[in-house]
Length: 534
Image (cartoon, rainbow, N blue to C red; front, side, top):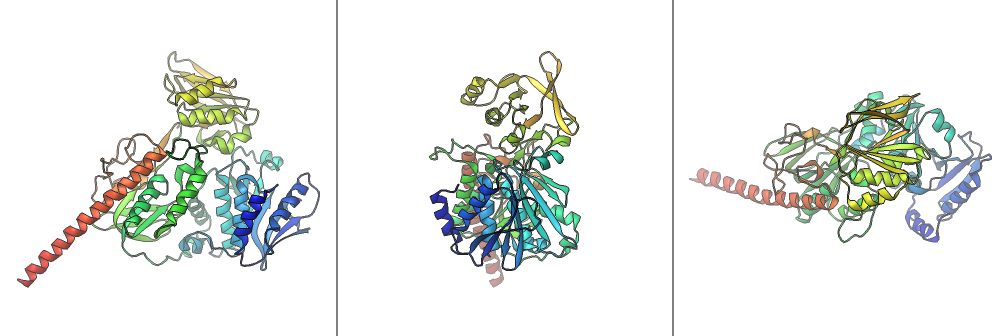
């Protein structure tokens, strides 16, 4: 099941384990149990600090196991075989359980570790094909390792269909806390911490603010291609740089196929994000991940207030917060997220195997989604608002060759209907004839572009009517010392390669500003000194 290359790599990863870890597997019979035993046996073979034991511990299923440390149950549980995208989740949890440092800001760690008066059990329903699921699962496994009152269990929806049907789950990741819905879909660690604090206010009181950073030359808000480029370019100038991000990678993590990044013929979003993180690590950049900027006090020195309670003072600010999926804004959309309405075909497509679905949007994202879904579902109907498609012709040609893809243009989606808690049809209007049509289907994938993540900057800098930050050719905003770049700005063509270039440009502009600004301040001080001497 695991290749010699993977096993050799695991030997390297586990060489620095600080303590022994035991995979404790529930006894019993299950069709997949032999496969799981073989899988765990192979993983255990790479280190003397890893072992497998089979015990009757009254776990969920004979294919349920947990990680045990010398101190006992770690709180990390898996129901199913953590292969595919979840293989990394298993290995990271092993390393973390063994003492490898987790990359969570100390302030967040203190909050998660706060005493809770009850036991919390998270169930994370995943699909092995879902690339968003590992981020959510890994975050909650860290919660379990930080707080002994928390356990987190991965549940493979493909192997526990009864639970999927019982809870009407139609999208992953789907997170339950003590049997009640906690989060659905892609959810950042900082958001999950906020939700926990809402339910357990005593955690907020336990926050310990870490020591304040010295005055920064450049602070970058955003961890996508633009933000990473800005941080690296600034650090290469020898500046004091901090990068703040909900999650490193941004929207790029959701992109499975990248073939237009010049000099890199083919890569994936997760691969590109890993490369960006490795490049960041080459420089002395302070990274504040899993936190948000709640506000900015403008002035000669800008003061940023973070969701963790920290404050950062900086001479210049680069805003690179990117964008998020745009919602349709029609009745039945928000009410049915996770019950037939989805935004990620890679994550949720497998739940609609053999069913009829719609994709809203005829741009590159929409046609790519239709092509991805066509190999899984019974049929895909693409709805485009305009009379012509906006997607690249090469993608349109591929879609038109598929027998199970239908493209309808010049139509407006008006409502999404549901029966028994699940999407049952979509209502749309032919814009040429005004005819209203109701199409029966089971799923709706929304792919209609992006909305800039600029809410925190309202009133700080000038914005367009669409919420994009207005910049000039040097990435300058309306405010001195504040620059912006990437998808959050008015720059046309939201592309990875353009965002990287714009991030680099913003950094160079910030450096130029610092040179002029510092020189001006020095002259001013000299002038005052001469006057005093006279």
